[in-house]
Length: 255
Ligand code: SF4
Ligand code: SF4
Image (tube, rainbow, N blue to C red):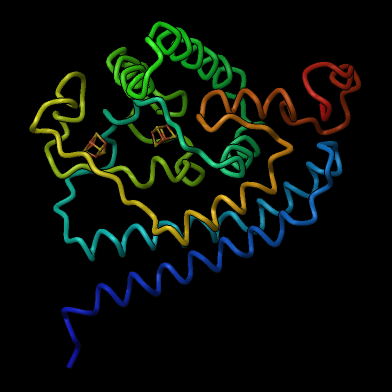
């Protein structure tokens, strides 16, 4: 007979082990990156991201799912429910930014996505600069930014995420157990809002930090929209190598 008390706990342990293994493979593939960010660096980074990130995200989602099962929380989130996609997405790992940029840099929407990322980044910076610097300044700035209601550049008109397979862990870990109307506007700060995040255990946080440290040379900010702009500055849009007019040395070393 199954032990229904320990089963979710065992599943969580197994999911964590799979996630740690995916992280360790990612880390292994970053260890040989050159010290300087050049075209060789980007070629190797691309190969690592393409081969390792699908497994990484699958393992992460499985961990989050197991944690939700374990905590038995009544999640109210549904597809195309997107009030939460007005937050300024932060705590993003550099390899997540690089993978997302790699995914969008060849798309027709790329210039528009950059423009919107720039617009949202400038808005947040302006708000943050207005705050008196203290321990709560960042939280106040994030809240005031959220109240502006600026949609994430990757949010589609139908409310779906346009980069769903590449959305960062910060988006994947965020849930609500209250009706979606309490995720919008000032209701987010009301007692009726019950947003929550699935946190990783310390061992996974440490492994993540180790993994990201191999990408220090990229010097990406840990907020998603400025991160995408930084990736563009380094790597630019897709270049198939046939258009000489784009290889003018402007806009990043790899264009
Ligand atoms: S966090 Fe809130 S807005 Fe976002 S999907 Fe869940 S219920 Fe909808
Ligand atoms: S990346 Fe996707 S899930 Fe995350 S805030 Fe943007 S639209 Fe929403």
